[in-house]
Length: 213
Length: 216
Image (tube, chains in turn orange, blue):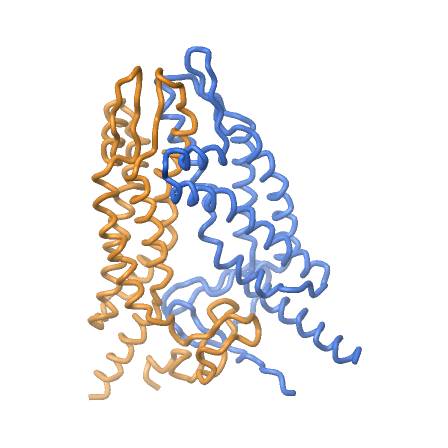
């Protein structure tokens, strides 16, 4: 038996996404008799959906980083603050630890997520077969870490609610926050629609064809 | 009528490897031998532990949302903030979608997750086939990653650091309740055994079917 035939699909079984029950592949696109979830041997249109969501997130990166996420006004003097500007501001006050946390959550993680998902999509698309276990670890990190990028959105919400002292000092949320929230939500959705089993399908089919010839 | 029975084996959700179901003893985590994903995280008393934690979480959710998380003091004037008020402030600045995201991820989803978990775990503990158990369990699994209380807590800490130079910040009762709530929800996620839950839900649903045919 070739190694790709160890897959459930190759043996005529599909796994319910929600309750993990195994059913014959003939039940594709019916509902799971155990939990009622729609059954699919592989996530429908996984590649197209993930590319589309990832592209949306990538495009939103521009307004998210270029537009101010909030405006801080003190004694009548207003100053718009972008995500990166906020990090710089923190380092100016010597708050290096917190600056690194914000830098990681708001810039490094979203960029890293987009790069990681792109490389996984290319792996499937071009049937790359190297370092699959490492790529799975990368996928799990991307999937787990996604939500932490909401940090800056929550910070804006908290600051806007707290700093409301009329002419003395106030903070207003701005459109950059909307774009940034979009980046976070769309990359999370992209990680959800990516069916990692495709990586193994392509890789193992390729390997078995290679070993037969 | 013959009833559909799923295959007794298990398949990895990340690489599709088909395996015999391993024998499990006590608290045990089983990883996929090929790709390393977590296949089964077994906790024998999962239903009881989840029920207790979900109820504790529902109780803590009340003060975490009603009491102010932070209070800011500038020249004798005070401004208080709750999770809900941080969403409303964004709404007033014209960022309705961002406000909705905060409302969903920091209030609605955590609440809904606890309600669903208490419902399913309660039914399993009492061995009563309450209606919609499968749907409740599925909803819980899909909502899981969208609850972001712990991210909100870190955001509170970042905000404190940003404000502490310019004004006096007081932590409120809401902050302590929120921290306790996060401890409880994190524990409940780690004590949940979805594999066990699905088998018990299945058994309950089947026993209710048998009961119905018996009544006829």
